[in-house]
Image (spheres, rainbow, N blue to C red):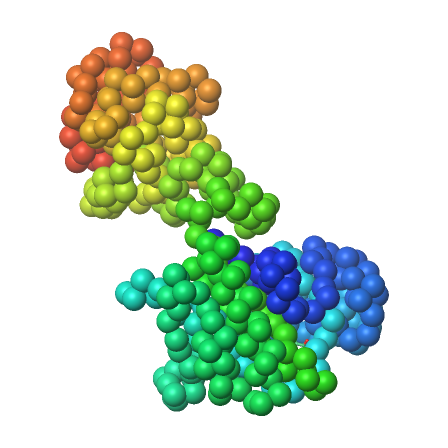
Length: 378
Ligand code: GDP
Ligand code: MN
């Protein structure tokens, strides 16, 4: 999960990493009020999960509350590389003397955190890496040892003299934030030194590992804000792997590989899948019911294809789960079910015995895919 800048700055602030005083705002009114409270010159910044906001016009200085309102009106609703701006962050403007780059990411190949620092910041770091790789100091941190002052001194050795001490302290805190927060990335671009010699984070990019969310109840509020799609919201709450696609055949299966092959077959049969939904290899009947509810609640779905292989889960329990779900949600579209594996025959018997209108059983994956595509068109 990629946090918005303001969320990242809230996380940074809890580790004493210096950031500017700011407020998150949903409307021009709120932006004007925020600018009034902060006082003086402010920056109005688009909050979207994508970089390059500055170049896209999503970051603007304002000298008065009235101007902050005008800028917020401009930025709210703006489309930045496919992301619509729903909130802005209004913060006290900074007098920048110099912009740098600082980050810690997980280097999967080395199995260690990798800290990076560059005297050139504010720009695309990939560009710096390509043009002048030596301009970036890189060091792997042994998680058993942690970050030590000598690591920090090395990392900041390419920065201007007056910024080194402050940036070094920030690196130590940033590492703490990265480890405690179960992050896969913490990035400050730009890290700045101000005209009066203070070093602080002007931007914040924090990515947290979704699998660790249960350890961070404070992130759940962020997740709720970041997940706007209603189906994705329920899926996250129920720990179901779900991804919305743009077709019309709703797909549900158990196991990521099986679901991916199902998507391929839908495509091969001439249809397009409406989603990827994996209830998991050992899904309970209840989980199956929850998955089905998610697929059926998507208005774009014209037919549903359920593809279950009973390995860990038993097909009779799956069949019961499907029937339970159909008591909770109305089946407005045809549904094709393919059950195979443990207790498949019994599962099919349960489904057929219930005699629900609009539910077809199919013997093979291919048959199921063809039928689901045909039904979606009917
Ligand atoms: P990004 O473009 O999405 O990475 O957004 P950033 O938050 O990194 O901002 C982009 C650029 O806007 C920075 O590199 C700065 O040059 C500029 N900027 C952001 N905040 C301020 C500020 O408070 N004062 C000034 N003068 N410039 C700012
Ligand atoms: Mn940036």
